[in-house]
Image (cartoon, rainbow, N blue to C red; front, side, top):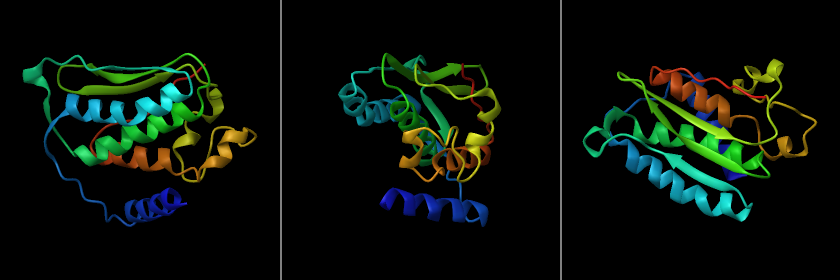
Length: 161
């Protein structure tokens, strides 16, 4: 219940333009490892393989971003991946594109129908309202993640089979 209240407060701040970005030098590999350590017990509890791909060399791991927003974005994506994956694996990390990093979460979950892939980023919308798991949240996590990504100058999308 507290998570839902926090999500409602966060989406209200976003829609009111009251969210501030605090860019700072951040060790992105450390950030990803902290997220990994947080979610690993939950993923393993479901019998899932859970791994991280963080390929930057040690001297390249410092980037300028809002570490808390980045943590919130990836946490939201991983919560959904764990919720909707019952077997096999979840992998997350980034691809180094030279002037930017493309973060990703890949899973072997139930998938999202093509006609719902954009809708999942809208407030109070879920991919498949007939799925029993869809009722476990308010449908705000991915909306908040999308808003944070855009505030940080990025793009977010889903690809699914």
